[in-house]
Amino acid sequence: MNWNTKFKWYKFGVVRKIRNLDGDDLVEVLEDTINDIYAKKLDKNGLFKLYIKQLERYIADIKAKPKKGSKRKFDPFLIPRSGDGRVVLFGLSNVGKSTLMNAITNADVKTGSYLHTTREALAGTLEFNDVKIQIIDLPGFLDFKEDWIISKQIVRVARTSDSILLVIDLSMDIDRQFDFLITQLINSKLLQSEEDTEVYNLGIIATKGDLPSSKQNFKKLKAKTRIPIVPISMNNLESLNNLKSYIYHILDVLRIYTKPPRKEPAKIPFIISNGSTVNDLARKIHNDMVKHFRYAKIWGQSVDFPGQRVPLDHYLNDEDIVEITTSR
Image (cartoon, rainbow, N blue to C red):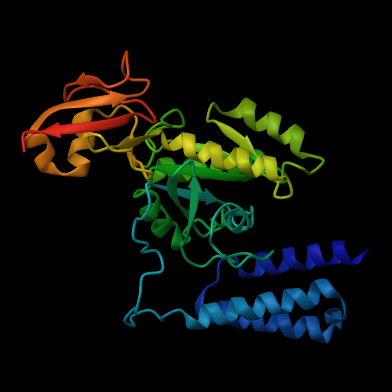
């Protein structure tokens, strides 16, 4: 048996031991695991050396967590909303969400190949086409632990988002991942059914698209659902750019540039949802603009000719330039 196979089976045995444990009981088993590695002299191998460091960080995280009944200093899942849209990454543990965050945002998220690398909700910003999108990396689900306490906190964050993106690892069991995640969303009343995907602009990011089995599993995933899917490879810049575009389009927003009379348009757009009117834009700028509105002039795809006058109920298109005239 080679070292890779030996490490894989050893780690699998550890997961089976800890799957229903937490707190002091979990720490005890993890510490016993480290001692066992040393006793069997497995630490001479690089994989096990790294695993010891990962387990030590895991133990430190658990010990740092406030004990039951103690006053909590902060909520690790409370992330103030920022930017022009909010998207959450929703998936099982170790499917590559944190690595993905680091690749497409300004975040620096700790990554690792052991369960629960991400212990709290973490945020980063993706900037694309003048739109700032807040990406939330949620801790991964443990699908073998039915009463996993963090799942309720994950769902709470997901409810505050504009879009939920399921992250599915193409090197793992597709049915297991997809069915579990959809069930979580339905049981949490985030979705009413698998077909109810528009409520949170549901999408799928399929990771590890460069592995040998990925093509077959991607076809299987496509046949399984009508939810839009984007396959990615962390080593492929084009696929990451495609993902950024995918996230931008799934938010379904408009970029509207405003301008004062006889001046150039602003360089930074107002971001509003698709289907918005001049009235919606005016309210976003200032409520008094609606109260004292006379007319608006528009340059862009939503009008028949440049500078056309329109009323408050005129629907806007992406990249319209809008000049609003008020009675004062």
